[in-house]
Length: 236
Ligand SMILES: [Zn+2]
Ligand SMILES: [Zn+2]
Image (cartoon, rainbow, N blue to C red):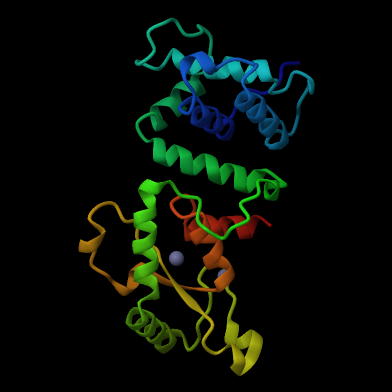
């Protein structure tokens, strides 16, 4: 029996790596391809794997990346002939949207790969490129503005009579009693696209959040949003 075809999640991870490599690097001796093969074998997305040894072998992953060349108009040589319909679907969906691709790949790893903690990142600093550091600073400035913090909390408290984390449901006051009175934070959910200084602020652009969820989101700023984190918690 044949091993299952690459599914959507697997192809997203492959395409994500495809765009990080030069054409000449898509071979079975490339450490990044070896690592991806390892990750794909650990994803446990398929119920039945008839041939464990061949399943997502380094060579099959290298071949899958080579298949994308066929769909890539930047590539002048000839890509591999065969290749599933699904390759084309994923290519069409993402080749013009690399940021979305990167984000989806990140979430797939978070949702399906165990032992991600090995991937260090000891500091609580966000994993950001210098390009988005500016946006992250702006994000922090917005959500630590004392006036915005006060107004947002008041609005939510008036409406719901409590301040619960909108991601995990944690309610510091209910948990700690009076001592937990002022522990909740706010998180700016708006995606800043350009000219951050000109963004207007609507209280709907902020959510009430606990310190832990907030740390998780800000550490992965630009990759993980509140909805994604909710999904991850649900899956636990
Ligand atoms: Zn929370
Ligand atoms: Zn934040």
